[in-house]
Image (cartoon, rainbow, N blue to C red; front, side):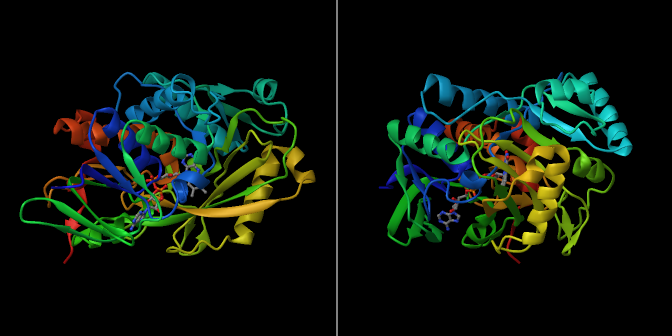
Amino acid sequence: MADAEVIVIGGGIAGASAAFHLASYGRSVTLLERGEIGSEASGGNAGGIGALGWGHIPDLESYLTMGSLQIFRSLHLELGYDIEFRASGGLQAIQTEEQYVYARDRVLALKSRGYTLELLTTDEARGIEPELSPDLYGAMHFPLRGQADPKKTTRAFADAAVARGATVLTDCQVTGIARTIEGTYRVACTNGEFSAHRLVIAGGAWCGPLGEMLSLRIPIVPVRGQMWATQPLPPRSFHSLSSAESYAHWSQHPGWDADHPPELTHIRSNRVTRHLYGRQNRDGEIIFGGDRELVGYDYTVDASGVEVNFGHASEILPMLSGLSINRTWSGMMPFSLDGRPIIGKIPQIDDLYIVSGLASSGFGRGPMAGKLIADYVHTGNRPQVLAESDPARCVTGLA
Ligand SMILES: Cc1cc2nc3c(=O)[nH]c(=O)nc-3n(C[C@H](O)[C@H](O)[C@H](O)COP(=O)(O)OP(=O)(O)OC[C@H]3O[C@@H](n4cnc5c(N)ncnc54)[C@H](O)[C@@H]3O)c2cc1C
């Protein structure tokens, strides 16, 4: 007898959402997390939720973002978990003429495909975000973007899963995985062994090592993101904020090769662009981050990167230049080598699923990613939209 129908490995937003949705469908599910719920990227991210609308022909990205938005809203407003969700909208600052050309073309192209965004003049942008610099060339406005507290959200999914009958075990590191001839997964943990008929890998930046336990190569690499926060301030900033600089750069130089996922800020330790995102949280801290660097599992915050990021943020919000940094932190983002999500069934072994590769926007996309994998496990049929994220394209056996 297996302990559960499904084991989910990883208590980040992807795994917690998968467990919540599986439990909501009446499945018996056990979630195994080596630390606390949300102890890695899902608890330490910026809490930005990206969304552009469904578009005329909804693709995986529309499903992940718009579906997640709906789940965030319902977790907060219908299920009553205070996750600090706010449909704040987002502004992306344009700082140069070159960025303006990129932004104008992007807005036109996306609007023609049915997405929701606008190009604002600097005065229009300052009308809704008064602290923005008057020196900008304008801003892109994403009215559907939102924000929420990452730790509270991830924990809310785990709590909601438990309320629906799931077992959630923390301080439970998976050290080995075996499949019996009868088709049961036996998962060895630091504090016991658990079994189930189906297994969902939701290990974020650690999907690689988890795959190796099953003799699989899962091409996900850890990309270090780092952030800083000011002291709490009275409300000064209202939107999720970002800069067009990195997007304009990556549109020309995605920087993708066999060893590097696309859209990093550093290639072989050299900075290629400045990336920026942030917001003011409910505690009043202004938090920003941006760097995306491939440094293995090294969490050491790079002070020079923080300095560059603080300078960039101060160009956009000049009021920051009079403030100092109160704390910094870092986390590991799960980037697939081709930059696309890996969500679906792993073809090499029966009843094995994965939900990962959510990269730098997995907080905003994780709730729906978890629901889609839960739908797949529950029905046995692949949601059509997951054709785009099929693990068969990249997961291989270990040589
Ligand atoms: C600094 C920073 C800022 C970011 N800002 C944003 C943002 O504003 N908006 C946005 O959408 N995204 C953002 N992201 C990205 C987002 O946080 C991630 O894409 C997302 O959290 C990934 O979720 P996950 O569940 O796949 O992985 P994780 O949150 O990493 O969860 C995986 C879990 O698996 C567990 N695990 C691993 N190995 C084992 C094992 N052997 N046994 C048991 N458990 C195991 C880990 O402990 C971990 O808790 C940011 C990330 C960082 C680092």
